[in-house]
Structure formats: C-alpha cells, structure tokens
Length: 201
Image (cartoon, rainbow, N blue to C red; front, side, top):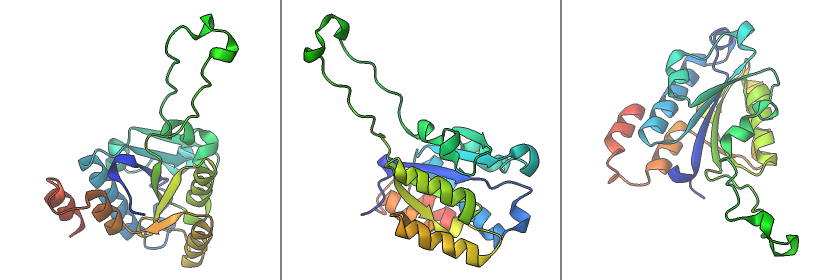
C-alpha cells in the first residue's frame, strides 16, 4: 500500500526548543521535520502540530508552527487524549431534510464518522513517549498511521528503536522522509516534482 497525498495529513509532535538539544541526532531529525512540513505545504496536505507542556519545554520552531493549521498545547503524552483525533476528523455533516417530521423507523441512521483524510503521517519526539502514545491511540481510532523514522528521535537510540519495533507490531507503517515525498508525488510528471525534489536533494 502506498501513501495517497489526497488522503494524507501530517502531524508534527513536540519539536520543542528546550527538548531538542537533549535528543539523539536532533539536528538531522529537525531538518527532516522541516522538509516534511514544506513538502506538505507544496502538496496541500494539512499539517497539525503538538507541544508538550509548552510553558516548560517552549514552543516548536517558528517555521514548523507557521505551516501548521493549528498547534495543540497538551499535558497528556498522547495528543489524542487532548483532542488531536477530533482535529483530524471532518466536522459531522448535518442531516438533510426535516428528519424530525419522519417517524423514527423511517429516518436514516446517521452515517459513521469516517475521516476524509484517514492516512496520518506522524513524526516527532520523543519517539518512545509522546510520538508512540499518540500513534498508538490514532491506530485505536482506526486511522492508518505512517511513522517517519528519520524525523523521529529520543534521548537514546535504544528508546527510539524500541518505539519503532512496537509501532510496527501495532500496525503502523514505518517510512522515511524520501519515501513520503515520492509516494505523495507518484510521478516525475507532477508539476510540483521539481519543488519537492529540491527539498530532499
């Protein structure tokens, strides 16, 4: 299964200024997060951000905050617990017609709320805490989750890699920044190919 740009949303988890210096390969990971954000903007993929206890850990970098539709300040390690899942689902459509005038047995049952963009590409920090818990809860909410491994990190490689093992076992797809780019594009004929390609050269 390939990522579909029309079905994708990007979630950037906790790339915060006071957290990043303590993390393994943080400069590389942050560069890849910026690439993902710029690619998403070029390809009109909605981008959402999260910040864990920003009063203590500071905000995400301005370039990431700027590309996000919204940034969720959270205290739970899982952003889903603080409402991220609601942001990722479209608002419920009101029922058409005057349903109240029909007897109950003639009314159509409400359609289940399905995400219009149900493929969630997620990257962030720390991989074994906030990213892991957010991704696992998104899977529980029946989103397809794609974890961008080269845009994720933890304080140690062991914790990061343990998170990837657990996420893969739970059904998340593990990808890289370049995999996301080329799957979103699908073809070199895409008019945005040169701009996206220039971000990953």
